[in-house]
Length: 177
Image (tube, rainbow, N blue to C red):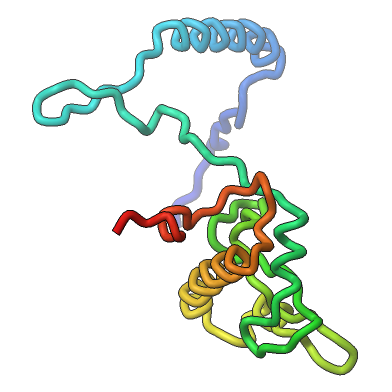
C-alpha cells in the first residue's frame, strides 16, 4: 500500500480582497469610458438588397398607433345583445385578445358585446375569458368577425361617436361603382 509522506499543497481559492477592491474603481472607469466611445462611433448595421446598402430596420423604432379610448363607443357596444348567446340587457364591451401587449388593453374599437355574469349564471364574457367556450384559435377567428360585425352594426344604427375613426370608410355608402 502506498502512503504519502509529504502533505499535499493547497492553493488559495480566491485572490486577496485588498487587490480586488483596489482594482475595481479603475475597471469601472475603463468600462464606462469604453461604453461612451462605442456609443459615439455607433453606426446602424447595413443590409444589402440587390447589391445596394440599406439601413437595417432592426435598429429603427417601430411606429405604433395609440389605441382608441372612447367611453361612448364602449357604451354603444354594451347596448347591443350578446354576440354569443343573444341575451339582451346584460352586455358588456368585451375586448378582443388581439393587438394587446403586456398589461396593455386592446383598442376600444376591438370590442364586441358579451353578456356579464348575473346571479346564478356565469356570463359569456367570463366564460370566454376563461377559455370555457372556445379554444384559443377558434376564439381568435371568431373575435375578429364579431368586432367587424359590431362596428358595422353601431355605424348602421347611427350610434358611432363623433371623433372616433370608422375603420370601414371604404365599405360605406360612398362607393363609386
